[in-house]
Length: 165
Image (cartoon, rainbow, N blue to C red; front, top):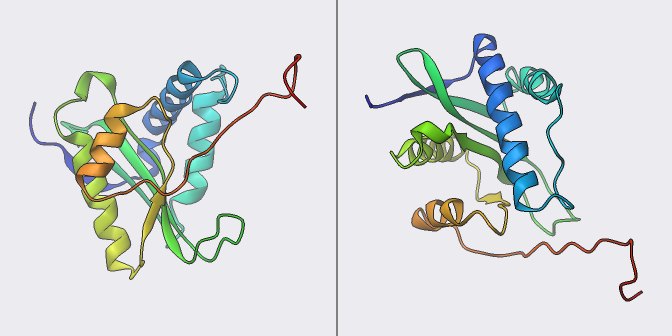
């Protein structure tokens, strides 16, 4: 595979980003269907519409990796201020990173991650935070390989059934 080009996303990329976003939803739902939303027929279009609203925001990075004009992955991060519910100061928040399954294991995720970290660094962001599914060991390895450390653990409990109060 030729080396992917990482560049800012454009509106022409939105259909592919929408499909990759739906894949992200499906993968997380597969990890834990009680915790994560499942993809629906409209998920790709809805995801693309959401991302379209992000493209012109100067505090947001939506970057794609492409090979021969085909978008094979994207990353989405935003610069955010204080978040007292998360007990954190200003930070870059890495919301999404996904690579098409046929292109995984070739360093595409690392290229996207490096590019978004460079964007955030250029904007003077003091730190980057992210959440990742417990079962996503490949993502954990990628993030740890560039210096991310574990700081929070999300726990989920369903309230139905006969469990303890």
